[in-house]
Length: 45
Image (cartoon, rainbow, N blue to C red):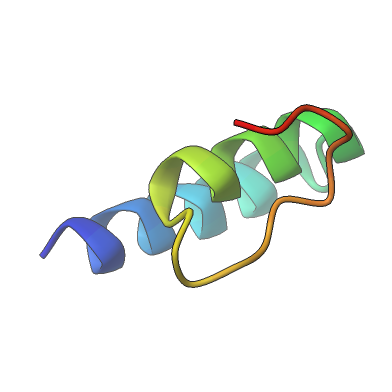
């Protein structure tokens, strides 16, 4: 439920803003599902 929730939230935000900053998008993805996608940020969080 959490994975899907984060996924749809990110999708909604992307569609609403029409393309948020990379950092914002990556941050959301990492927080939404850190196990599904590997964090591309230099911070080992």
